[in-house]
Length: 373
Ligand SMILES: [Zn+2]
View 1 (tube, rainbow, N blue to C red):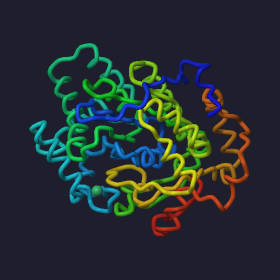
View 2 (view 1 turned 60 degrees about the horizontal axis):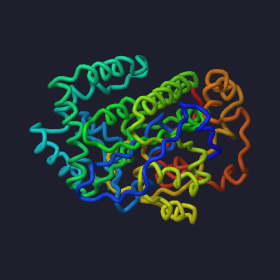
View 3 (view 1 turned 30 degrees about the vertical axis):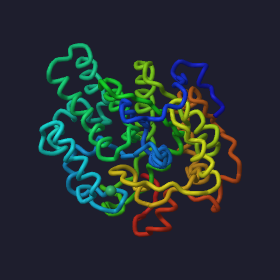
View 4 (view 1 turned 135 degrees about the vertical axis):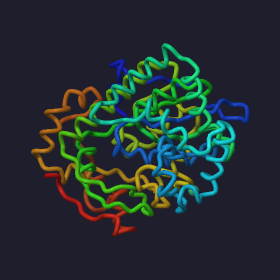
């Protein structure tokens, strides 16, 4: 990446140690992908999860919800609680905590973590600050349960490195506060215009395809506000918890310069991703195993490296200008330009986005694609 990262504390790159192959005695390592949705996190998670020492679990904070218990599908195709891996993980979690299901942790989970865009996550951020300062038995129990989720995944899968792509910076902070976890933060960012364009597409609920609710087109201003809050809080988490190795990864860089970007990621997460990056460059796919929640891309079965710059051709100029007026300063701080130069090879019909793959392989998933009013 053309790394402006070292010029600003907000964009600081913290180097981890050299590669550390996990052993049975290693602390559980969590690679946490943090940032705004529609930034390419599900594809990145699948690539990180393809390492032999790693298991990728998707957006792990969803396991506490009622909906996860009822109609969320695992990427293996089964309903999560009919998937042998997730059934065993929940059972192990219950053995460790004494609870009856993941959902029994819902109340404590939402108290500290529920992210409501209207409140900008401020109540949860304040509660976490209070919990960190004051502590007490409730906080210790809540932290022990948070640890138990990852312990259960490690016990069932036999893997000591877990990729969690929940993305919310609030959960990133929660992980940094959880005793016993070895947390590595990957702050993933994408051009706000790409995020805004992706959020303008409408999809109808279809749980079997990984679409767990109707997605209505989101107005530009709301996407920009969301992008701004998620990335500001992600930078705050990185600054606050300097002991947790972290780095900033731009979507545009990891999809176009995978060898260089995965070398940077390898350094911070402590594992060698060189061979996986080489396979991606050669056009080979990675295959999600038991990703339990997140973007429907996880249900594709195979994910290839495919840069998606569709917004450059389809996002109307007025919307691009609105994005830049609202977020241009912050975009510049992250190294983006108002008029980016992109190699023509990543534009045009030859290159498929992951959404294109869904459209091609599961045409019923795409109900309509239209611009928000
Ligand atoms: Zn499964």
